[in-house]
Image 1 (tube, helix red, strand yellow):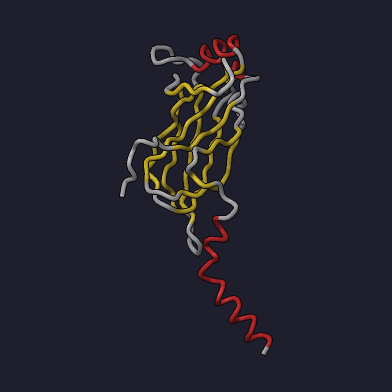
Image 2 (spheres, rainbow, N blue to C red):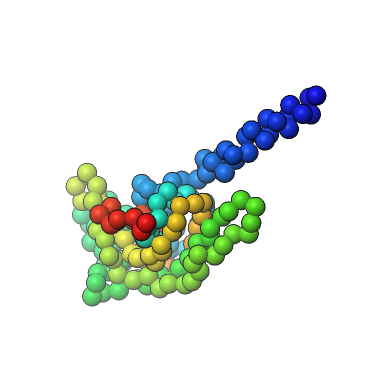
Length: 176
């Protein structure tokens, strides 16, 4: 009788099991940022995240600055449209995770990041960030694993706070 009650309880919980797997993963949106030391040649980010809408998602490297002097220092490192700055090669892999099956590779490749494509600001004067594009990838709702690693050292970036970002343009419509 006890075994039957346990079996019924487990069967009653099965429909919610995929939601339990998502509970620990960051959800995109809002834009999500993961700490990442771009200066080291062996930096690795390996994390799971959840997507709620079918959209094009921007994977980027973010470099923070604090103060006017730091703004110009970071801008010189990151570069502008006509200046590449310090070229940072990164390896990016995105896998879709589905319970009961092997992960499906969505994207895998190496990218030489250069020049900034976005300048962001904070509420504090002369505090903000510059971002470099890694890749734009269309993702459907589901659970994903993100793996990012640096391919070589970039000692010029030591002391520059950096992150990996996943976000989408808020003025762009979902893909379906």
